Length: 127
Image (cartoon, rainbow, N blue to C red; front, side, top):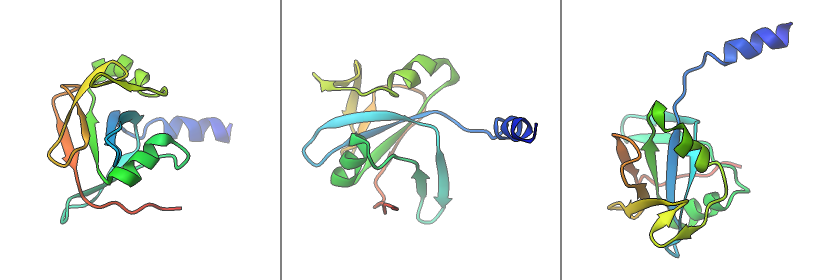
């Protein structure tokens, strides 16, 4: 019973869905669905997000040093679901979604939602 109550309480924690776009040092673009993002500083403006170390996209973030955080609308569940799978970049798209390079060269999806943010603050990786 206690586990069920804990589970119900945890389900009330608000979170969003995002697609994190990445470009590796070699120019390879990719992206993944992210739901764990938090602001950690106002000055400098910084966020933290969860990325599994054994994922290819983690390697791309490390080598490229930048990422984009694409905010999704609640109507974009299908897009969020698509980016939970392994995707291959081809012909200027990732998983069939086109992207543009931001000023700091992170992959930003073309119009996934109303807010697109390029983040170029150096990142530290935890173990």
